[in-house]
Length: 253
Image (cartoon, rainbow, N blue to C red; front, side, top):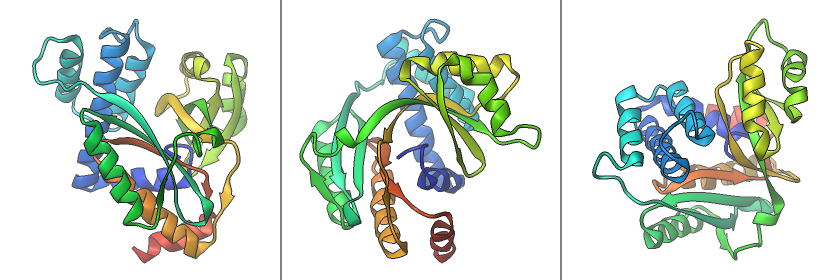
């Protein structure tokens, strides 16, 4: 699952190379365009757009790119595509469920690319509804760890804002809440003087599937192949990979 998994943490670290960074920038820009067209181009009146812009800035997307995306969202700049949100469902090795979120201007291309990425890497495409019930839409606000910031401090800041739990992943805390409480949670963090990396809705698995090293290698092959598909915005899975196993697999690359 994007954001709410160790794989996602590793994925973002790899975004340092130019190809990965370019794909990340494209997705963040697409988020801004879609949010602006859906809820209006004013970030002060559109929290989803505001958070999309903040996430882009946190990931070092140039301001010129952000401004152009906002102009396209407002209809002031030609060349903007019309994107459609589509979800695909599938399985990786070991019964691991995969929920795939696309934003595409070509439904046929997206369907073909998703199918190829899955089947060529040991995964399978599943029927609609066969995987999605395993995931729940949640608000996820990511807070970077700092020497002066512990989990209790984060919890105290967001408890009254609707936070349900705090998950520690790598070098971040993830505050989990109801989708409608994202704005309240990130506002509470700002008021408490706590920085945050991103605030958005994601799909969180209700139950996770433990995978050993061999299966983890196969699962990550599927997830990384899907992550390379241009039309795919987010990939969520219910795989639970042990920290030591993940470190060993990273060392092999």
